[in-house]
Each structure stands twice: as structure tokens, then as C-alpha cells.
Length: 199
Image (cartoon, rainbow, N blue to C red; front, side, top):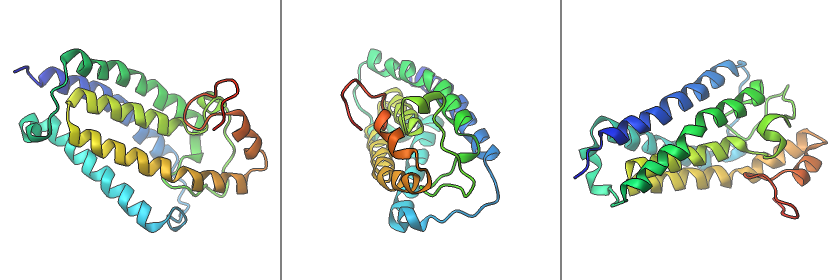
């Protein structure tokens, strides 16, 4: 049986810098403005956050003591598990690039701030939701490195809930910015748009 220690260290090497960037930028974006979570839907807001909490608990359980998670482990080959490191390492840069361009516009809900601006620089030049793309890559990296189906399932659920609220988020942006419809026509939602590809 292979040791989990190298994979735990790799997971820390991916998560610590990436989450440090996210926490720093969320702290910097504080404005004191109260944002309603009702508009994203109370049920979705609660389920998303509870699922995210369960995911964090599962990841921390693996990091503290991988034997706690052996009942949900997957028999992945080592090379596939190590591919999680290759997927995860760029997340630090992508998170920084995304959030430094978003600046004070950063919120944790679909509601935009009263003084929000339309950001079309950095990764937003090509993708409307690069934060969700980065989170998706980060969770894929965690699933591969931990080789754990529970972490994978919770990751898929978190991403599904985030993607599910994107329509409402974009509706708010269309209402707030005259240029947003044209911006939508020129950029991909989660991946850069290929020639002739929509959304």
C-alpha cells in the first residue's frame, strides 16, 4: 500500500497558496455593504454552503488522517493521482489573476455591489466566470490527489450548484450593465469561446 503522505503534501501545496489568495482578496473586497442572499434563492444559498462545508470537512479529514477516509477511497493509479498536482498548481495563478482583476466587485452571492463595475480585463477578456473555472480545476485536483469518491461527489455537487446559479447571476449583470449582453456574445461562460461556439 502506497503512503498517502506525498499526496497530502501535494494537496497542501495546491490548496494553501490558492486559498490564501482567495481569502486575501475576499478580505480586501469588504465594503460593509449588506448584500441580500434572497435573490439567489434561500434554498440554493443554504444547500450550496452546507455542501461546501461538508466538502471542506472531508478534505481536512483526509489531510489530518487519511485512514478516516479509506471507506470512500478510489483505486486510482499513482500517475493519475499525480496528475492532480499538474491540474492544481496553475490554480494559484488563475485565482490571483481572476480576483486581482475583479477587485472590489467580488461577492459570494449573485447580487452585485451598488458601485460595481463591469470587468472585462485579465481572464474576463475571454471567460465570464473564470472564478468558477478555477474552483472546478481546484476541486478536480483535490479529487485526484485524494483518490476519494466522496470528495469527488461533493466537488461535483458544489460545482453543479455554482453553475446552477450562473443564469441568475448573469441576469443581474444584464440588468446592471448595458454592455453585458454584448460581452456575453463575445466571451465563453466557463471556457474561452472557440470560433463559432456559443455560451
